[in-house]
Image (cartoon, rainbow, N blue to C red; front, side, top):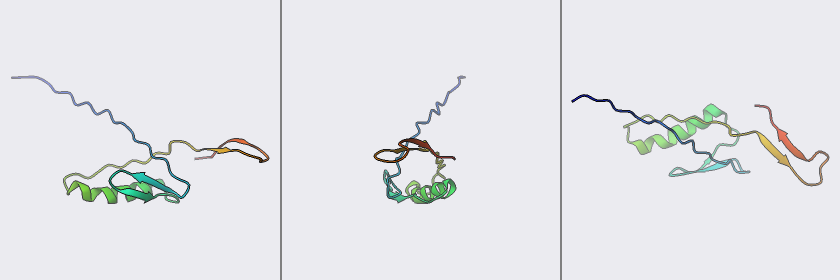
Length: 87
């Protein structure tokens, strides 16, 4: 019997909002302090925390991306509006 199989690798990217205290609420892992970490440090933190749940069967690939750098300034300030922070 001959044939072919197709593997659909559509990934759904999950986003997490970093709270004012620099934490994210991550399923299974709980609250993680990511404020002040570099992108690489954040990836390593999540990787190291989640690997124990895989029982050595897989090495997880963790990719952290910044969703945006917009900060809204509201209230009685000199220049209200959206501030675009440089990456």
